[in-house]
Image (tube, rainbow, N blue to C red; front, side, top):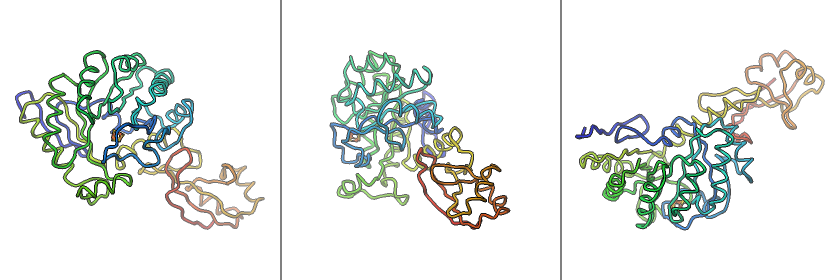
Length: 353
Ligand code: SF4
């Protein structure tokens, strides 16, 4: 503990330096946050960028896993997910400022002013008037990824001229703890609100360029070795220097194991079909008839054991024992899927009925 009472706490899935973390981070951890990918356009070409090739540098619009074509679709996907907050990301959302502003406006008017919104940007297009426009529509938190020296001034400007919570979000590049500490010192000096350090992620899109630079993939296949220890080393240095800025370290595995799982559990709660069974892992199970006796199937529909879903007849997995009492004479399958709008299938198992 230093003179100001800061410590480095090792929570189960992340490390926290200081007495608090950004609200955007805590909402993300509990699965309350939807991810609004406003555009893949970006003026930078960071060698470590983990954004998929399907998205990066393409002007595409996604909410969570769903590609959307307009703001109404975006809002309906967020409503379906049961989120109470959103992160606006890209690419660089400021490349499509009008769309970004419309999204924030629509979020606030659909879900209320307390619906928390944070925005990620590399800051290249940040200006006083841009920041003011974002503040006006109610942006709660802005996270700069300073890829250029000039961005530091933009962070200062955001802190000075707006009431938005201002911080930075950067990856921990192995061996670059000193750079992280310099950034933390700068943020501390200007009275910024937080620093979020992400473990360097390994993805299909950055794999080659990370390997070319001699980085090693961790055993979990999701992150780069030494990135986590670099972040922790930076936190220890911040502690030694007595910095006040709260620092949060977010491990790459956290995204799947906690954030996405918690978000899926929330989605299931608000968008579970009557024939679906929720699992603790954030997936749904449902049955589908493959071949069947139509007359018997009609009886099952009437008795509330089969449901028409598109061209299929579906059933709740717990109702197999009741369906076996009919003369369906058919095979079915139990499907396990993510609760995405299109129910992304991850497993199928045949059952006899
Ligand atoms: S600034 Fe961000 S989105 Fe753009 S290339 Fe770098 S990491 Fe990717």
